[in-house]
Amino acid sequence: MYKLRELEKKDLFTINQWRNDPELISKLGTPFRFINLNVDEKWFDGYMQNRNSQVRCAIVECGNDDIIGLASLVSIDYMNQSAEFHIMIGNKNNQGRGAGTFAVSAMLYHAFYNLNLQRVELMVLEDNITARSLYEKVGFVHEGTKRNARYKNGKFVNMLMYSILKDEYMIKHTRADNDII
Ligand SMILES: CC(C)(COP(=O)(O)OP(=O)(O)OC[C@H]1O[C@@H](n2cnc3c(N)ncnc32)[C@H](O)[C@@H]1OP(=O)(O)O)[C@@H](O)C(=O)NCCC(=O)NCCS
Picture (cartoon, rainbow, N blue to C red):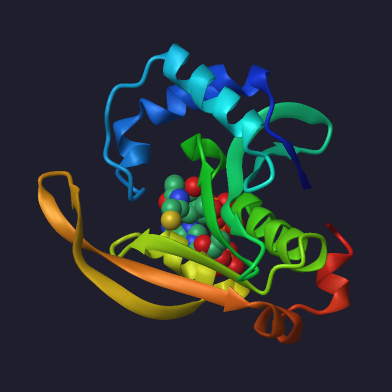
């Protein structure tokens, strides 16, 4: 069983290791670059000052507070009631064990039932089949393709945009699903 808690300063050392892992970063839209711990500490301070437009959570196992992944709602826009979703499970050993499914479902519940949002969107690399399968499983809809939008590992690749609306989430997820959240 997994749970979410808000990101804390103590998580930064682990997150910094993830952000310096070329294999992990190759799955994300952001380019790889070397990032020292000071940069991540400043990034965290920036988050603390902008908590009204971002929710950044650590994914942890129940009974163990060590961070295994990061799930975030960013660019929260209360007028349009929308936000962007980001996720990563940092260590390969923790992938493929259900943490991603839990975190996406829990963050969507938070977005729609606590933050009063009506749309959550995300961007994913076209060749990230694992992430796309997860998003489609929980009800995200492919809205469009940004062609050659990112330079990754020496070539330009497409980015896909997905979104889910509150109505779609409610139809797809029964109350029983949400009882674990
Ligand atoms: C993508 C990611 C968030 C998925 O989380 P996870 O905990 O590994 O995934 P889960 O165990 O919850 O599995 C979720 C679904 O992903 C799909 N999936 C998992 N492993 C897969 C694989 N090897 N190949 C294809 N699909 C796969 C399946 O649809 C699975 O659902 P199912 O078990 O009901 O069949 C995680 O692997 C990760 O962080 N990867 C690296 C970073 C990344 O890609 N982030 C997303 C950027 S948009």
